Length: 403
Image (cartoon, rainbow, N blue to C red; front, side, top):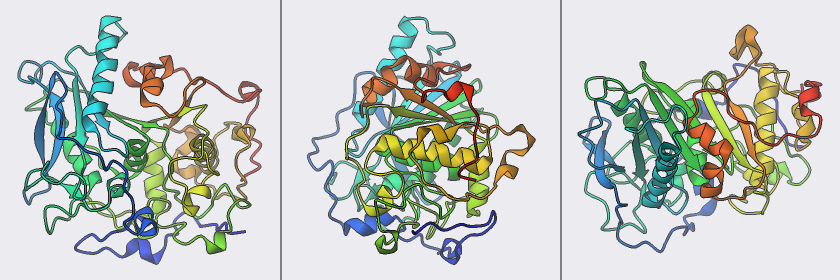
């Protein structure tokens, strides 16, 4: 059995080694050996109708992130009170994801959905691959040698010498909309990702830096893995942990995480950030195929299916925070003696993240965000339907069997 227990403020030495120039830190990238080829068939960038490509500065050295952006924008910057930042999946098709979210917004406007902002911004970053997007990005645009490194916030490899990551890029986009000189009435920012984009958002919800003056919601759709704050894992039988190299290295855990441009914190501090933020974890109940990340460290997070890994993650964060949620009813985890990190939420016993399960959906962004639960997550400022729950969930409380 390869399940370790860490104290509330313990962290690995590797986690504290901060380099002046961020190095490759993503375990999935290391395991792949550069053999990832997802999204290799790229055409020229296609700008969706109603959008244009814009560059946003990242850091102070001239680096930029390319984004699909509402066009025109001059007539709405003073009126908009909401902005949506949509992250593409592993195929790096930001144009398609801009369309998905814009279609959802226009549908909500047409249906006069309560609280929807007709002037809302929809933007979708484009995280380029130096391997498959050559000739499609400018000299200052961030691009990544590994096709999936951006999902874990790895440093870009273009422009040469850059230290910026996809997490830093998101910080810059969020800060852009928080600028009250340019967007005086903008109050709400919703950051959305599905699949590979969901992987970036679940990590950004823990380690991202948020400005004052705006409310931020994170929507994590069907993420394949999460960054565990401790060395505990829900699976101890299906995978021989002793032979599972990099199982707690960043993307999967916090070993070798070197921080962001804003600095480095302890895993407990990142947990405290995460559980006190508005994070909506969208899970398609039929997302049960053995697809997505199937490396050993991913299997330790709940087996082969994304759905089960997300149920295990929901179990994990609730037990760490010692909430009354009867998460044992999901019956997907084999945790033993999870530490008590309830001090992160104080006396309330409540956490900010919410689990929303779409019963009739598979691993499909349109199905997930087009559902009534997905629409509420995107546009509702009030309650969000939680969708499916195990039998008896509403009548029970946590039995602390994983405590």
